[in-house]
Length: 262
Image 1 (tube, rainbow, N blue to C red):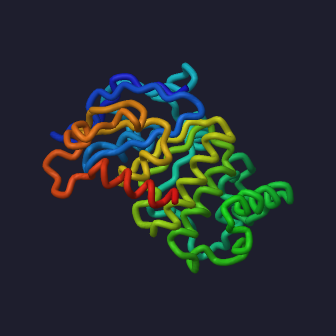
Image 2 (image 1 turned 180 degrees about the vertical axis):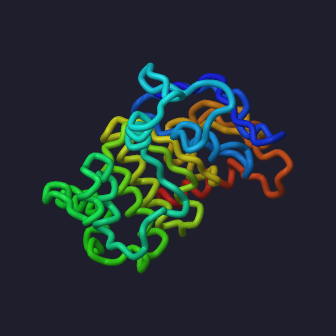
Image 3 (image 1 turned 120 degrees about the horizontal axis):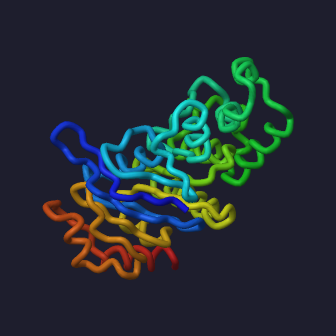
């Protein structure tokens, strides 16, 4: 279980994350929503230790990760797979090699430098790609793929890490609706089939309500809602997106969901 207690991050005079306390269990798909600048991305980076907390703690299965360094920190980052909006693939490498990067931390450094991976790793990488309908592009250069295809490769790479937890930072923000559905479906399956927690920051309230088992909403660095999608009322939505023109409407979202299901 992931446990955050009074977690805060300050950048100068700005308190980006303000005293967040959360517990996330295995098998939970948690959508983190809020306006731009609400602290969503910073929260995920604090969990992965890509950013250092100003105050508070992060623990996994009762073990604090705050003081980890060296090999311990590298092991945590490997088990806490991160998926980014920008994909973070090597465009000149083929798709298969990009996915195999997911096991590089478990192999001697020289094997990665010369792109040597055991046949068992290669076979598994192809299987991970196949679950995302990307096996046919295994030998294609990653830079030639569409954005949606690249994000699927990034997910396959994350799954190759055998992660204990997945953090996805705006993974569908730049994707078309069809690819967004594929990516969110892949994260949903990983959460259910591997029984791991998945935290995904999202701008789309509709997607959060359709795919997530739990929604955490942030405003000005604080958690202002934490519960099932069914408990998210229009009043709470207005509070989350206060000051924004064209605030999301639950009525419009429900109509969209009905059309998608038809």
